[in-house]
Image 1 (cartoon, rainbow, N blue to C red):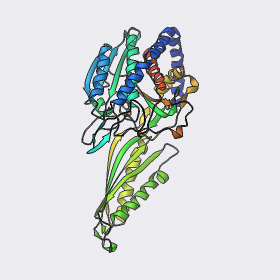
Image 2 (cartoon, rainbow, N blue to C red):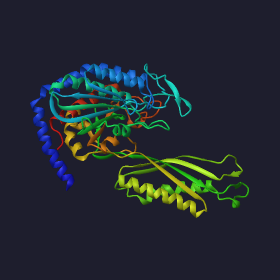
Image 3 (cartoon, one colour):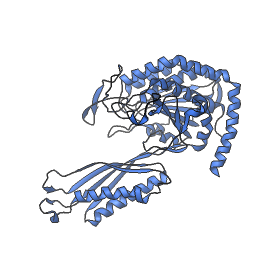
Image 4 (cartoon, rainbow, N blue to C red):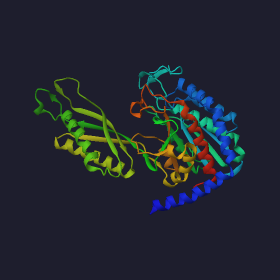
Length: 437
């Protein structure tokens, strides 16, 4: 019944949006014309960011470029938010709600492997290792698209019925060890206040989605992401006399197998997907010594908060009881990182007509949830939010053969950026004209 009410309300709002759009067709045409004119600049910005990437909480030069552009546009600009974040505020010519638009700024410790003339050659130290630095997830495109949307909306300041807050966020990929960073820190430092944000929009380029199309999903869209560490303690002995030991390696193997049954046999998978993955195991120093201790680390992913909590409980129980059955102990530590990226149902329904008008209805696709994570979720915990995917794959290319995000061969078709620019501008204008009630 609640879903029926939501979509009935959305139908009424759609009629209001269409009426508003009919009254201002010239404004939308002007936005499209500006997007055409700015396309070379968007590509130039993207290539500059791509060639000069910076890791999480190290986006100093990136932030300087962004702040300089926003100041040039006449925005109220705040820097140093959550260490290197930048926030720009554009106050429209008329009073109204506050819309936030967000782009992430950080690159990854990945060595680029392609022949692009603007490929990154940057190297730095990460986790005490020499690594390459690359925008291997498209954050360079996100910044470029949002800068262009800022320029377009600035030129139509007098037409805006409210305020737009532009959030350029550091450390989406996670802060370095021993540091804090990302969306949760920005929220803690008041990025959604003064003025208070009514709705927030974000987008992500996708290398397996065809240029000219976009994907969305109401409710759980991307998974929560939590880390775990299990420390198994037994009794050390000579490898020739295993009966004198409590073997933590054998116990760890049983725990790995046991926790795989949590998802396959204990979770209601018709409700939503879930994942538990062990990513590393460390223990022992010699072939003939059974060690005293083994440590394993991994990740937990869920698309539903209740299921997320159940996974934590079942992981603790499974690991500790398997260890106890062998006379060993297992200490389980779970660290919550990122919540479920949850698209507000009413806001999604309210804005889908805008997406369809920007890209054309056949090009706006309802997608399945993914078990990757996005810290945009922290904003959505505080205010209604919508996070969508924009195509960055060349037309006609096989998505199964496209280099994946976070890999050295990751590439984006830059012809898809203009759609992202127009989408950000249209979402802003339509929401300010017809806010969610």
